[in-house]
Image (cartoon, rainbow, N blue to C red; front, side):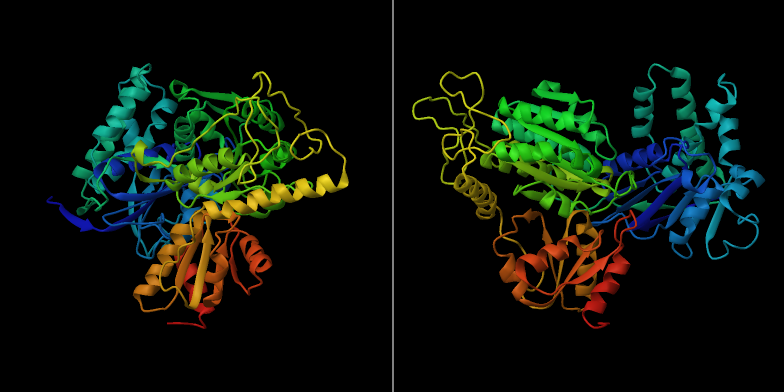
Length: 611
């Protein structure tokens, strides 16, 4: 049978199955291969919080969504074109998201009575007409994988575990992807388990050639490479980019990097990644808890390191007393908060934007700290670098906000030229002549005097310091002065950050303001409406405390302001409080990124129902 190849511009695929089916691995391999082919891409991993939820249940479903295209994209897409359903539960959970007329590739071997019952199906959706509005391709993935692996001497359980590679091979054939990158990965990953390596390789090829030979597919698809800016690219997740950002900052500042943290989803990968950079002088420390991690990092800062600690919401709460101590000591410290669904343990593997007020105000006493936020997985590099720059220049703890969506999501990253990165000058105080530990420069910043230098001995601790001398002081007027000095220092950072930019007209009817990981969805929605002739503009904030110094003027130039957030209105509250402006809110707190179609509806509603 002759098969045709159809060219597409944009495809969204969602792999879904049990959390033990290897869906994250399958999606990651497809992503890496797609990056090598040269498409632009964006990913959305989604997996249960339970380490091993019961097989076949709805809450045990793990998925990985990938969007790839021949043009510049900013989101992983609202609705998949293709759903790879490895069992009935995966179909049940994700069918509502699939585009009408979309393709379902179903592993028929898993659609038995037990799994149908666990998924809550009263009858088999593959035969009862429920899927009539979709194109369904039934593939006995498990059986075909077992057939392909006969004679290798593996147990049935070991062979069944390879079925994700069969599905991956089939999708490689369908979307004209090369198998060689995954073949090389298998050889390397399973170099000490040759039988497993051979089995996965055979399963991959069996899936690929099943697509080639079966008559279930009349055609395959091709997505041409995107027209990206020339340069060296790599596929990168937000956590990987964050780790590289602080490594680059330490190299640029010519001081050691010390990272201390306690494992917590979704921030743990930052520690994993940084532990691989010992050759760059990186020291990593897995502490016994969040409080110890923050304390160790602050101690490293006192000793002259670029000190960083990373966590997620509950961990940020535990670190808060140490952060306050860092503010009192006026020592540089970067705190990375990879936000997840809260409060408490909440939705540990899902995304949210609900820590903004906490990191802005969540400390005792008058304890101001700068807060910045990354907008995309690749932007995590830039903002991690910027957090380090601000921390050492202004001798202050700095919060960097990312979130679960950015941390685990990935996109192509143009590797920057090291020479293009802004300088981070660090000059430790070494001259004891005239030294005063709390004397300040033109930015209200005290000197960084590391211990062990003769003549620079000074007091540290949480008690209030006397201005200039650093002696412990209970003088009421001195405390008032020090509180104001610390606040003025942080407020003054506004003159050292970029002016806020507005995408679109600089004044008009509606300004949409976003921050953090909602950037892609909001910008895509604004662009889509603008192309349809709707008048609106977009400003994405990366600096949240202090705000850019021109933000107030920008707000006055628009009749209406819409703020979409994955919380109940935290930035909206800050904007109202700071600038006394009315703000229209759009809030969804589902543990998932905002969708472009719902954002467009909110924007049109804000404009009074623009067509």
